[in-house]
Image 1 (cartoon, one colour):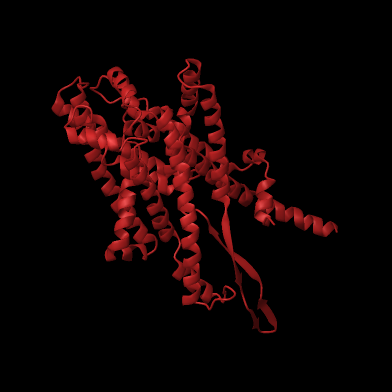
Image 2: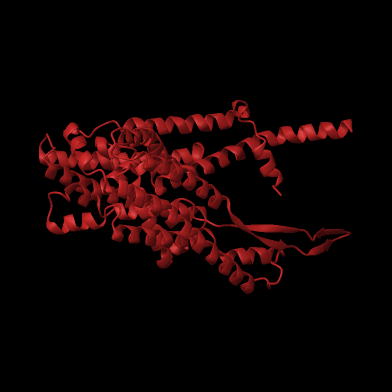
Amino acid sequence: MASAAEQLAASINFGAIGKATELRKRILFTLGCLIVFRLGTFLPLPGVDVAQIAAMFKQASGGILGMLNMFAGGAVERMSIFALSIMPYISASIIIQLMSGISPSLEALKKEGQSGRQKLNQYTRYLTVLLAVFQSFGVARGLQGMGVVLSDPFWFHISTITILTAGTMFLMWLGEQITARGIGNGISLIIFSGIVANLPIAAVQTLNLGATGALEMFWIIAIIAMVIAVITTIVFFERAQRRLLVQYPKRQVGLKMFGGESSHLPLKLNSSGVIPPIFASSLLLLPLTIVGFSGQTGPGWLQTVSFFLSHGQPLYMLLYAGLIIFFAFFYTAVVFNPVETAENLKKYGGFIPGYRPGKHTAEYLDYVLTRLTMVGSLYLAAVCLIPEMLISWKNLPFYFGGTSLLIVVSVTMDTVAQIHSHLIAHQYEGLIKKAKLKGRRG
């Protein structure tokens, strides 16, 4: 049976958004920030031949550059000021979170509350700058090796490193502003908007392949069926959860009895959401930025690495699946602590029937969560890899891949859920007033 909040959310009329002034401002602010991001993807770097880059990109768009271009919203193809997109920030977040699990000082910061999180965020920003400088230097060297630089090489390197690093930091700031003052997770929405903006172009390209005979009609129908099946699977698994019964004992305070009720502790099948595919893709793209730009003209070992880490190759698929499973377990361990949850239940008198409060409850929670995460990680790996195989086999756009569809569907569900939450908060006072009036009339 659906909860009262779920019933209310299902019956919400989105026309009420016009009456919710704060929510309307948040939505407009989010849309404005995303428009700024999209406009920035069309501003090219100074000192490069954009037409020649676009022509060369079409020849190498099926590999690492194509996927990087997907996350950047087409900025790589146009070699814009946002060509690095938000990926250096995501890579920095991965490194800081990994280090916080093995470094006692960083782990202590996590336990300090808001002040500790602020320091960790500051370290993440510093590391983002270093990674962006490194990657932008690789981009500058790669563009020079391609012969598309029109200005002095020294000043081109300086300007490219400065502009691309500033572009990444601006997107990081823009994402934080969306999260704080808008609707949804800002970083995810930036990636989401880049993918959605290019979906119509990808659909037209696929239909053109069928019109020219390069792709049979059977495969076009199969692609449509695959997209529908993947979206359905994502929605089903993202909403799936295991509800553990939690019982609270009765207690007497004065002459009144309190407690004795039962509730549920919901454990999602995929607690990590869309984070593992994004982290895995970012980690694979980080060392291959230089390879993607100079793989055709660099030494032999660079070409070998570029080949084995291209889409459809067994090594790429194996690393991608392994990283998705690893980050699914890692991020779940970060967001859910069984020991802390068990202690909180014990503190407030709650217990899971059949298990003693404290250590035994924590072991049971860890047992259940491990098995849920295993199923969730395998689901993420399957959703991301199966479409990727078809894409590499039939040379289709990346935007129909499992990673892009997972990001689009998951971010849409999360954003709509936040909109529902704001509408519920806005309408709650009015609902109470109506209930009081009905009670008086009765």
